[in-house]
Image (cartoon, rainbow, N blue to C red):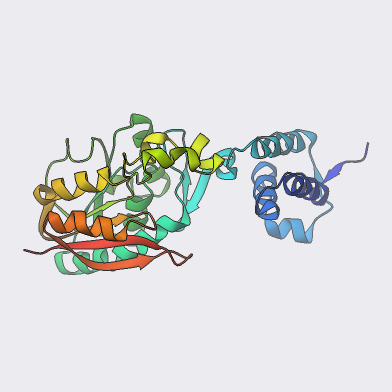
Length: 288
Protein backbone atom coordinates (compact mmCIF):
# COMPACT_ATOMS: atom_id res chain seq x y z
CA UNK A 1 0.00 0.00 0.00
CA UNK A 2 1.54 3.35 -1.00
CA UNK A 3 2.26 5.79 1.81
CA UNK A 4 -0.24 8.50 2.63
CA UNK A 5 0.98 11.90 1.47
CA UNK A 6 0.43 15.23 3.14
CA UNK A 7 -1.45 16.49 0.07
CA UNK A 8 -3.76 13.47 0.07
CA UNK A 9 -4.44 13.85 3.78
CA UNK A 10 -5.38 17.49 3.31
CA UNK A 11 -7.52 16.74 0.28
CA UNK A 12 -9.46 13.97 2.00
CA UNK A 13 -10.08 16.01 5.12
CA UNK A 14 -11.25 18.99 3.09
CA UNK A 15 -13.58 16.87 0.96
CA UNK A 16 -15.14 15.19 4.00
CA UNK A 17 -15.77 18.48 5.78
CA UNK A 18 -17.10 20.14 2.64
CA UNK A 19 -19.49 17.27 1.86
CA UNK A 20 -21.06 17.54 5.31
CA UNK A 21 -21.59 21.30 5.09
CA UNK A 22 -18.86 22.49 7.45
CA UNK A 23 -18.29 26.19 6.94
CA UNK A 24 -14.68 27.15 6.15
CA UNK A 25 -13.95 23.48 5.41
CA UNK A 26 -10.64 24.24 3.68
CA UNK A 27 -9.32 26.27 6.62
CA UNK A 28 -10.46 23.78 9.23
CA UNK A 29 -9.03 20.83 7.31
CA UNK A 30 -5.70 22.64 7.18
CA UNK A 31 -5.78 23.41 10.91
CA UNK A 32 -6.53 19.80 11.78
CA UNK A 33 -3.88 18.32 9.50
CA UNK A 34 -1.21 20.80 10.57
CA UNK A 35 -1.93 20.18 14.25
CA UNK A 36 -1.83 16.40 14.20
CA UNK A 37 0.95 16.05 11.62
CA UNK A 38 3.01 18.83 13.19
CA UNK A 39 3.50 20.45 9.80
CA UNK A 40 3.01 23.97 8.49
CA UNK A 41 1.17 25.51 5.56
CA UNK A 42 4.54 26.17 3.93
CA UNK A 43 5.44 22.47 4.14
CA UNK A 44 2.13 21.54 2.52
CA UNK A 45 2.97 23.85 -0.39
CA UNK A 46 6.64 23.00 -0.80
CA UNK A 47 6.55 19.28 0.08
CA UNK A 48 3.02 18.05 -0.67
CA UNK A 49 4.20 14.51 -1.43
CA UNK A 50 5.97 13.93 1.87
CA UNK A 51 4.79 10.75 3.58
CA UNK A 52 2.58 10.85 6.67
CA UNK A 53 2.62 8.05 9.23
CA UNK A 54 -0.49 5.90 9.44
CA UNK A 55 -0.93 6.79 13.12
CA UNK A 56 -1.04 10.48 12.22
CA UNK A 57 -3.56 9.86 9.46
CA UNK A 58 -5.74 7.99 11.95
CA UNK A 59 -5.64 10.93 14.39
CA UNK A 60 -6.65 13.27 11.57
CA UNK A 61 -9.51 10.95 10.59
CA UNK A 62 -10.83 10.86 14.16
CA UNK A 63 -10.56 14.64 14.43
CA UNK A 64 -12.52 15.07 11.19
CA UNK A 65 -15.21 12.74 12.54
CA UNK A 66 -15.46 14.84 15.69
CA UNK A 67 -15.80 18.01 13.63
CA UNK A 68 -18.51 16.49 11.45
CA UNK A 69 -20.32 15.50 14.66
CA UNK A 70 -20.47 19.18 15.63
CA UNK A 71 -17.46 19.71 17.88
CA UNK A 72 -15.77 23.06 17.13
CA UNK A 73 -12.39 22.75 15.49
CA UNK A 74 -10.57 24.67 18.21
CA UNK A 75 -12.03 22.40 20.89
CA UNK A 76 -10.58 19.49 18.94
CA UNK A 77 -7.19 21.18 18.75
CA UNK A 78 -7.38 22.14 22.43
CA UNK A 79 -6.37 25.75 21.92
CA UNK A 80 -7.26 28.96 20.14
CA UNK A 81 -5.19 31.96 19.09
CA UNK A 82 -6.31 35.24 20.62
CA UNK A 83 -4.57 38.59 20.27
CA UNK A 84 -1.31 36.90 19.37
CA UNK A 85 -1.50 34.42 22.25
CA UNK A 86 -2.07 30.67 22.05
CA UNK A 87 -4.67 29.92 24.71
CA UNK A 88 -5.56 26.46 25.97
CA UNK A 89 -9.26 25.61 26.18
CA UNK A 90 -11.11 23.42 28.65
CA UNK A 91 -14.73 22.34 29.09
CA UNK A 92 -15.13 25.02 31.77
CA UNK A 93 -14.05 27.91 29.55
CA UNK A 94 -15.76 29.88 26.83
CA UNK A 95 -13.88 29.69 23.56
CA UNK A 96 -12.43 33.19 23.03
CA UNK A 97 -13.46 34.61 19.68
CA UNK A 98 -12.27 37.47 17.46
CA UNK A 99 -15.25 39.62 18.53
CA UNK A 100 -13.71 39.87 22.00
CA UNK A 101 -10.52 41.30 20.54
CA UNK A 102 -12.68 44.39 19.91
CA UNK A 103 -12.93 44.84 23.68
CA UNK A 104 -9.15 44.51 24.06
CA UNK A 105 -8.62 47.11 21.34
CA UNK A 106 -11.02 49.47 23.12
CA UNK A 107 -9.31 49.11 26.49
CA UNK A 108 -5.68 48.96 25.42
CA UNK A 109 -5.12 52.72 24.86
CA UNK A 110 -6.50 53.39 28.35
CA UNK A 111 -4.26 50.75 29.91
CA UNK A 112 -1.24 52.24 28.19
CA UNK A 113 -2.21 55.77 29.22
CA UNK A 114 -2.71 54.79 32.85
CA UNK A 115 0.54 52.83 32.92
CA UNK A 116 2.41 55.78 31.44
CA UNK A 117 1.03 58.20 34.05
CA UNK A 118 1.06 55.97 37.13
CA UNK A 119 3.86 53.58 36.14
CA UNK A 120 1.46 50.74 36.82
CA UNK A 121 -2.08 49.70 35.94
CA UNK A 122 -4.29 47.36 37.99
CA UNK A 123 -6.85 45.40 35.97
CA UNK A 124 -9.76 43.30 37.19
CA UNK A 125 -11.11 40.79 34.65
CA UNK A 126 -14.51 39.54 35.81
CA UNK A 127 -15.41 36.09 34.49
CA UNK A 128 -11.94 35.56 33.10
CA UNK A 129 -12.45 32.08 31.58
CA UNK A 130 -9.30 31.30 29.62
CA UNK A 131 -7.85 34.60 30.85
CA UNK A 132 -8.05 35.94 27.30
CA UNK A 133 -8.79 39.61 27.99
CA UNK A 134 -6.47 40.04 30.96
CA UNK A 135 -3.61 38.12 29.39
CA UNK A 136 -3.88 40.01 26.12
CA UNK A 137 -3.59 43.31 28.00
CA UNK A 138 -0.72 42.07 30.16
CA UNK A 139 1.16 40.85 27.10
CA UNK A 140 1.14 44.35 25.61
CA UNK A 141 1.40 46.53 28.75
CA UNK A 142 4.37 45.32 30.82
CA UNK A 143 3.58 47.70 33.72
CA UNK A 144 0.12 46.18 34.19
CA UNK A 145 -1.00 43.48 36.60
CA UNK A 146 -4.36 41.72 36.65
CA UNK A 147 -6.71 39.74 38.83
CA UNK A 148 -8.92 37.33 36.90
CA UNK A 149 -12.05 36.06 38.64
CA UNK A 150 -14.27 33.13 37.79
CA UNK A 151 -16.78 30.93 39.61
CA UNK A 152 -15.26 27.82 38.03
CA UNK A 153 -12.10 26.37 39.53
CA UNK A 154 -11.51 24.52 36.25
CA UNK A 155 -11.58 27.80 34.34
CA UNK A 156 -9.13 29.35 36.79
CA UNK A 157 -6.75 26.42 36.33
CA UNK A 158 -6.91 26.97 32.58
CA UNK A 159 -6.32 30.71 32.98
CA UNK A 160 -3.38 30.02 35.29
CA UNK A 161 -1.87 27.68 32.71
CA UNK A 162 -2.40 30.22 29.93
CA UNK A 163 -0.76 32.94 31.99
CA UNK A 164 2.26 30.72 32.46
CA UNK A 165 2.42 29.86 28.75
CA UNK A 166 2.08 33.57 27.89
CA UNK A 167 4.97 34.47 30.24
CA UNK A 168 2.86 36.83 32.37
CA UNK A 169 2.09 34.51 35.30
CA UNK A 170 3.92 36.73 37.79
CA UNK A 171 1.50 39.56 36.96
CA UNK A 172 -1.71 37.53 36.86
CA UNK A 173 -3.68 36.41 39.91
CA UNK A 174 -6.59 33.96 39.43
CA UNK A 175 -9.33 34.35 42.04
CA UNK A 176 -12.44 32.28 42.59
CA UNK A 177 -15.27 34.77 43.00
CA UNK A 178 -18.87 35.35 41.99
CA UNK A 179 -18.41 38.79 40.45
CA UNK A 180 -17.04 41.05 43.24
CA UNK A 181 -17.77 38.80 46.21
CA UNK A 182 -14.16 37.86 47.03
CA UNK A 183 -12.45 40.82 45.39
CA UNK A 184 -10.37 43.18 47.53
CA UNK A 185 -8.76 46.47 46.63
CA UNK A 186 -9.28 48.96 43.83
CA UNK A 187 -8.48 48.79 40.15
CA UNK A 188 -7.76 51.23 37.35
CA UNK A 189 -9.69 49.12 34.86
CA UNK A 190 -12.52 46.65 35.28
CA UNK A 191 -13.12 44.54 32.18
CA UNK A 192 -15.51 41.74 31.39
CA UNK A 193 -17.01 39.62 28.66
CA UNK A 194 -20.00 38.52 30.74
CA UNK A 195 -22.75 36.04 29.83
CA UNK A 196 -25.27 38.04 27.78
CA UNK A 197 -27.58 35.54 26.09
CA UNK A 198 -31.19 35.63 27.32
CA UNK A 199 -32.15 32.30 28.85
CA UNK A 200 -34.97 31.73 26.37
CA UNK A 201 -32.53 32.20 23.48
CA UNK A 202 -30.01 29.61 24.66
CA UNK A 203 -31.58 26.84 22.60
CA UNK A 204 -31.36 28.93 19.44
CA UNK A 205 -27.57 29.22 19.58
CA UNK A 206 -25.50 27.37 16.97
CA UNK A 207 -24.89 23.76 17.85
CA UNK A 208 -21.16 24.29 18.25
CA UNK A 209 -21.80 26.93 20.90
CA UNK A 210 -24.84 25.38 22.57
CA UNK A 211 -23.25 21.97 23.09
CA UNK A 212 -19.64 22.89 23.80
CA UNK A 213 -19.37 26.28 25.51
CA UNK A 214 -20.24 26.23 29.24
CA UNK A 215 -23.79 27.43 29.86
CA UNK A 216 -22.66 29.52 32.83
CA UNK A 217 -20.52 31.59 30.46
CA UNK A 218 -23.44 32.20 28.08
CA UNK A 219 -26.69 32.54 30.05
CA UNK A 220 -27.22 36.15 31.12
CA UNK A 221 -30.58 35.56 32.80
CA UNK A 222 -34.14 36.21 31.58
CA UNK A 223 -33.22 39.33 29.62
CA UNK A 224 -29.51 38.66 29.14
CA UNK A 225 -28.63 41.70 31.22
CA UNK A 226 -28.26 40.37 34.78
CA UNK A 227 -24.43 40.32 34.72
CA UNK A 228 -24.30 43.97 33.63
CA UNK A 229 -26.43 44.91 36.62
CA UNK A 230 -24.05 43.03 38.92
CA UNK A 231 -21.01 44.72 37.42
CA UNK A 232 -22.50 48.23 37.41
CA UNK A 233 -23.80 47.99 40.97
CA UNK A 234 -20.61 46.56 42.45
CA UNK A 235 -17.91 48.40 40.57
CA UNK A 236 -17.93 51.61 42.62
CA UNK A 237 -16.27 49.95 45.62
CA UNK A 238 -13.48 48.54 43.47
CA UNK A 239 -12.55 51.36 41.09
CA UNK A 240 -9.86 53.94 41.63
CA UNK A 241 -10.96 57.59 41.51
CA UNK A 242 -10.57 57.81 37.73
CA UNK A 243 -11.08 54.14 37.01
CA UNK A 244 -12.91 52.88 33.93
CA UNK A 245 -15.15 49.91 33.11
CA UNK A 246 -15.22 48.10 29.77
CA UNK A 247 -17.62 45.32 28.78
CA UNK A 248 -18.45 43.25 25.75
CA UNK A 249 -22.13 43.28 24.77
CA UNK A 250 -24.54 41.54 22.47
CA UNK A 251 -25.15 43.29 19.17
CA UNK A 252 -28.58 44.62 20.21
CA UNK A 253 -27.80 45.49 23.84
CA UNK A 254 -26.00 48.82 23.56
CA UNK A 255 -28.86 51.06 24.72
CA UNK A 256 -29.97 48.73 27.51
CA UNK A 257 -26.44 48.33 28.89
CA UNK A 258 -25.86 52.10 28.70
CA UNK A 259 -29.04 52.65 30.74
CA UNK A 260 -27.96 50.13 33.39
CA UNK A 261 -24.62 51.85 33.89
CA UNK A 262 -26.16 55.33 33.77
CA UNK A 263 -28.43 54.38 36.65
CA UNK A 264 -25.31 53.57 38.69
CA UNK A 265 -23.50 56.81 37.82
CA UNK A 266 -21.48 55.91 34.72
CA UNK A 267 -21.47 57.53 31.31
CA UNK A 268 -20.47 55.98 28.01
CA UNK A 269 -16.97 57.13 27.14
CA UNK A 270 -16.43 55.21 23.90
CA UNK A 271 -17.90 52.27 22.03
CA UNK A 272 -16.53 49.90 19.40
CA UNK A 273 -17.90 47.66 16.69
CA UNK A 274 -16.59 44.25 15.73
CA UNK A 275 -15.33 43.23 12.29
CA UNK A 276 -18.92 42.53 11.23
CA UNK A 277 -19.92 46.11 12.01
CA UNK A 278 -21.98 45.14 15.07
CA UNK A 279 -21.93 47.02 18.37
CA UNK A 280 -19.64 44.90 20.54
CA UNK A 281 -17.79 46.79 23.30
CA UNK A 282 -18.46 49.76 25.60
CA UNK A 283 -16.22 51.85 27.84
CA UNK A 284 -17.69 53.66 30.86
CA UNK A 285 -16.39 56.41 33.11
CA UNK A 286 -17.88 57.61 36.44
CA UNK A 287 -19.95 60.77 36.09
CA UNK A 288 -18.89 62.04 39.50
